[in-house]
Amino acid sequence: MNTKKISFTNSEGMKLSARLELPIGLQAAHYAIFAHCFTCGKGIKAATVISRKLTQSGFGVLRFDFTGLGQSEGAFEDTNFTSNISDLVAAAAYLSEFYDAPKLLVGHSLGGTAVLHAAAEIESIEAMCTIGAPAEASHVMHHIEGSKDEILLKGKALVNIGGRPFNVGAKFITDLEKHSTSSLLMMLRKAILIMHSPQDTIVSIDNAAAIYQAAWHPKSFISLDSADHLLQSDTDAEYVAQMIGVWISRYVGHPAKTSIETTEDVAVQLGSDGFTTEIVAGEHSLLADEPLEIGGNNMGPTPYQLLNAALGACTAMTLKMYAERKGWPLDKVTVHLSHSHSYMADAANPESKGSKVDEFKRILEIKGDLDGEKRGKLLEIASKCPVHRTLTETEVKITTQLKQ
Image (tube, rainbow, N blue to C red; front, side, top):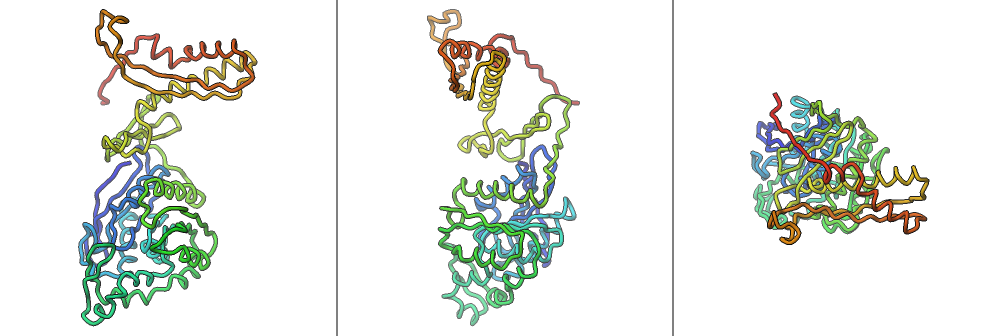
């Protein structure tokens, strides 16, 4: 993905810090806004993983710090639920002016409750998704219940929320009472996806049931079984993004189109964050990447895994073509591959002592009513696949030039 650091101005003139995630070699088909959880920020793992994964579904995704949080201007003590909604409206206005009007809102925890209210004010929104969201904004009062009297008496008080101190103002408490999500949902006619974990100990799954009950169709629910409230596991966050990508296609459709212009068979474009790379091959696109431990985002196979895949795919296709031509009952072919760099033994190659070679290990798993002779022939044919022959029997020449 391509990550852009941007900022936009809210209704109070405050600059809000944001990140815009875009597909690497594609033009975003649609835009979405991600709203983070209560007192969190745009950099929380769930927001980052979900936003970046959604780019693979053709979305440009804006995530930002609400006023008074993270790198955004303003004081948290001066904010409330209404200001959160207003910030979302401002984010939508920014996208509408500089990119395209957003069609999807995704909100995590209290951010999920906020997107329901913001959807009523943003005309372009066609669908919304909540993740572990409270049915009512007043749910967050349990974080500050012990300090409520002090806040109302003094106008503000320092409260420990999630292990961090925040100054909470009196208007935050009084503002919560003004919002009724259930009443709003009775009037809202936009597609909604509700995602919640039965094991959520911060916001119970009863909240998901209340939202579902109040919402109009089309509405959907997906259980995030075994996930924690903050989606701290990359696997859980990736699953959420994948499910949103599948679900939203029913309502907005139109996959992204490539913006990479090439006269060659394949084009490859590096993103702006880590090593994530978009590959466009004809009408198809995929990602390549490197593992997290060497600075990648692990959003796709490595270059050598792709090379293994090319050899394996060509091998399997060649075996099928040969078996069909012979009329053999080849039911299934699985090719297992690995690649390594090794050093040849001195005795085997005395003139190039210690020379380094690349070794591809290929294991064929063949299913079908085939005798030993036929299996042996298929083993022989595997080495005749075009990619194998390119790697071993031809002199490979790579020319490189700068595009004018």
